[in-house]
Image (cartoon, rainbow, N blue to C red):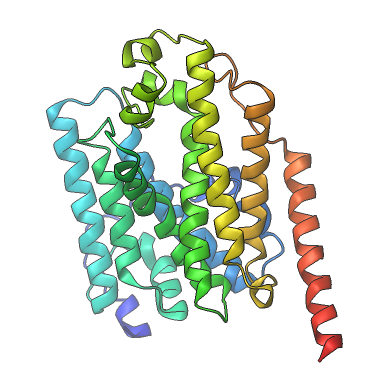
Length: 305
């Protein structure tokens, strides 16, 4: 792919693709860790985030979906796949994707991770229940770990274990999101909590739809929260000290979402009545603390050499 290929546009319209909103990045949790990144990495993170946000928004709205709406969404996902193929092959592509094309070339981002995310989002168009956790884990890999694998290529790393860090952190973050959004998702017709786990605690789909908040629900949510916590801990085991300086945005996201998990636990998972979130001042404090600790660690390591 060359600079010349970026100018080969053969399109009748320059309108943004559905869900592709440049303003969305500043409203996301990814924005705050990006502030301390060099300009090239910050703009690259924004480009990848806008892609992920666009395909996620495309699939998520509106609801409920008619057969025609589902067909239209699948056609748009096919459009994204074709546009990505065009970027990687040097063929003409939509001008709104020029920043993404530059990022793909500069950081040599693997195409398969973009396609994994598209596959995961498309899964939401035909699957609204998950029988086992292994099924759900595969979904989390597609929609969350894929993004992490793209971002570590932008942030940079020395040790191959960083890829496992991205994968397990993706599991942890997505599962935390699922626990927070139990009510939002069920109102949209989705239940991501594995059916085998619900059966284990005697909590039925009808109970969930009725927002039955009792000890069975609490035990189910505690079980899933412990599973999420184990993914956070596993991810941290794969984060090599040498990579902390460059991967501090991922570490900051880890700590922000881990704090969100703690807030749900402290609030007894009252997700039917309360939408848990980490307040902006706390997010900023976490980002600053993570950056400073990684910076001081690098200075200590250099002094030892």
